[in-house]
Length: 157
Image 1 (tube, rainbow, N blue to C red):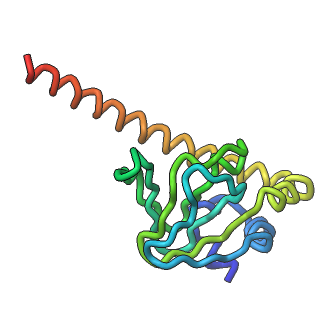
Image 2 (cartoon, one colour):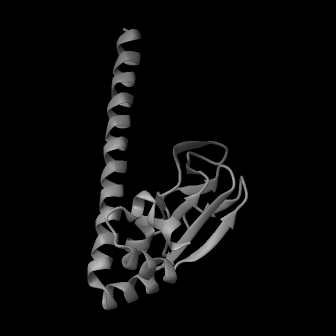
């Protein structure tokens, strides 16, 4: 089973022993299509690694409307922001289809940090890379939205 997890892109660059160390602390959880994995505005302090299926990241706009920000799949993490800053989740994560995750509690991460600093640093680097890529994607979307707004304004002149 550990070998299957070692193939996930999150664990790229980890040794088999490092993967085993982390996975032993993680709890597998399954969700049916449409089931909420993470709820916006709640705090969970749990990092989740998607091991199968896809999940939608959904941001509420108002009481009746929401926007899908991303569809994430195998090897991607969710819950990373609240995992570190103890703030409520910025968006909900909903199972797009049948999804299985490995959940790592903040307490268990701190155990890795104390007992195997090198592995903890690899986890942190992977999360930083994930956050950086998501910020780059968001910046591109903001740019496209800006172009769209300028085009709309110019068309009304």
